[in-house]
Image (tube, helix red, strand yellow):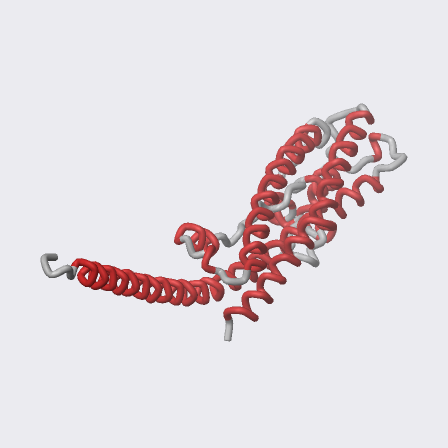
Length: 261
């Protein structure tokens, strides 16, 4: 300072500070690059597992779709079979069989991979915004369908309550009938199952049990109730399930094109 070298030292100090800052910035950039590179490797691995989850979801959706269609078809057959019939002409055993199971299986979404991606904070590292957007939309759609299931379950329980006031289930062979016939009706894994050809069905029919109501209005109430239920199932099978299947297939294609070599 005595030799008027203050300016020189200040310049030197500033230069040192700039070099340090540049060094820090370079180190941060390298660190960020390493983190991003590691995250991309993670996302590539997640993509492989997520594709498997989506493929499993599609199979599950198809199973529920078949089940809803089977239920709706049986209810249609029942409604047509009792049209213009007197109450004493309506078959109790047929009514029991066709209305035994009127609710599809709960959805079993394979959410393990997408939950890991959300919990690990990897989603923001997906470079293609359209993919991350579709993942979020698909995830939200699955929760929407879970809510639909709860609503459908409540409506089916209301319908079953009305059915229990109409149909007589007091068959001597009800245990065997349930195991061999009733649980198989509307089972999507048994496409060729025909309860009319089952021995337990014919045995039950031979008992000639009648409906427990003598009022045709009770029958009309049941028909009205499951007709409303069918309307909701139509929305699921014709609109919602095809839509979410399409979303899953689009995601699979995008993930394969982007992350699978």
